[in-house]
Length: 111
Image (tube, rainbow, N blue to C red; front, side, top):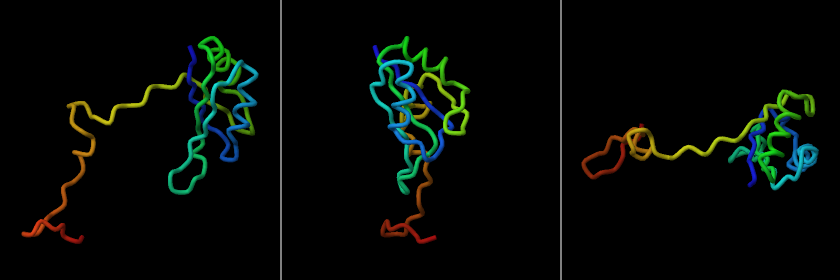
């Protein structure tokens, strides 16, 4: 069973191919992804690498965690599952947003 790893403190010029090549030293890389800013498209300095097995993922952590790569000290650890979009009381997280003031016709006031 494959295992996804979080890779943090990446140089902003690091490519997915760089990650693929580096982590291949620990085993078979299923995928490598750099997370990019939605607006600018630039790297956010972290990504995810999926190794083909838990053993290879463990080896990658041993080889690369707190080791230098492209002049940066990497953080490599097991990726945590995505958080639910619901908060603790079970309601949708958007419900915490402020409700706009409406005029008598139901149109929001300009602030």
